Image 1 (cartoon, helix red, strand yellow):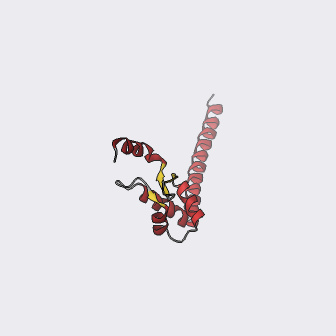
Image 2 (cartoon, one colour):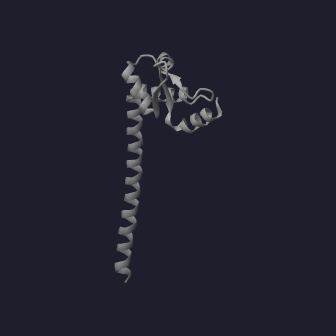
Image 3 (cartoon, helix red, strand yellow):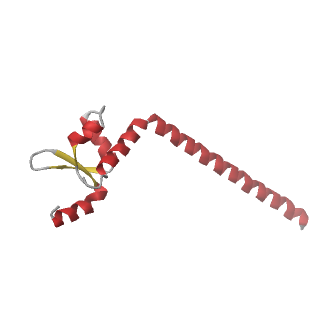
Length: 118
């Protein structure tokens, strides 16, 4: 009985240990690849983060496209619009025809302010 059980147990432990090594190696490789991608597209990632920062300001739910363009310089108009969409923003037009952007996640706050007349 021991003659059969011992090799089977050793094979099982070896397989589990090998699987753990493979898991941690793949996890580390995936993390490294993600870091390389972030470095490659750092400008886009930082532009999205900056857009989120401006659109998350406590007192300003909406930001005009002109203000965003001023602070996120170096992008063509349509390229900046794509960055804003990736950041989770939506575009609205005011009565005067100006283009404004707000985070979709702040729509409830926008509606509450509209109801309260602020």
